[in-house]
Amino acid sequence: MREDELRELVRRSPWLIRALGVVRDSALPDAWIGAGTIRDLVWAERYGNGFDPSSVRDVDVAFLDPTDLSRDNDNRATQRLEAAWPEPPWEAKNQAAVHTWYPAKFGTGPVPPLRSIAEAVATWPEYATAVAIRLDPHDHIAVCAPHGLDDLLDGIWRPNPTRVSPETSRQRLARHRPTERWPRVRVIT
Image 1 (cartoon, one colour):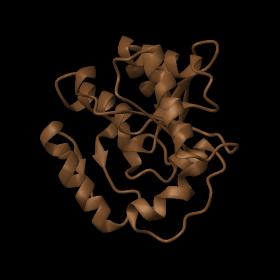
Image 2 (tube, helix red, strand yellow):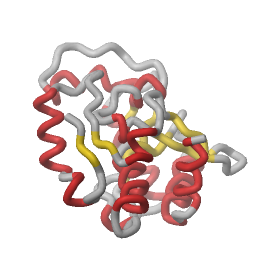
Image 3 (tube, helix red, strand yellow):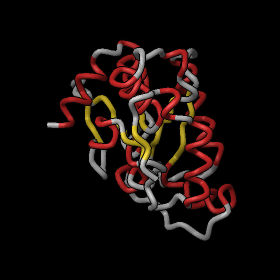
């Protein structure tokens, strides 16, 4: 089972396990760590020189709070995580509020409100980053991967066209330089 492969990689990272515990204990509603943090761990371990937490640009924390769609809610959530563990570069985003800012930030038409974390994760820019994880109260690692785990675990950078334009995808590819960072990763455009 591919989820077990991911869980094993996560369990071998005390840093990520600690981050997952901080997110769980933060009491943010339906909070998960996802996107680049998970990709960086998996690809550094499988296709690079090992995972270095100091290389993480941001720890994307997706949460779902339809009762407060303000940007202040994101800021408060990020500050809550920083207060619990100042080291990681936390970035918390309320997925229930994405429709309020996404079109202006990315120059797109309207997007529908997201009703669940799985619905949000399914829109993230690449299939390998459309993955989120969290710890449950019993320290079990839950996995949210609406498009599956094959691209993540098999080292494939492939755009997710759900919400990302071809131009934005090219920009992300140039910015992240996956084949330089992880030479055995394959890019499919």
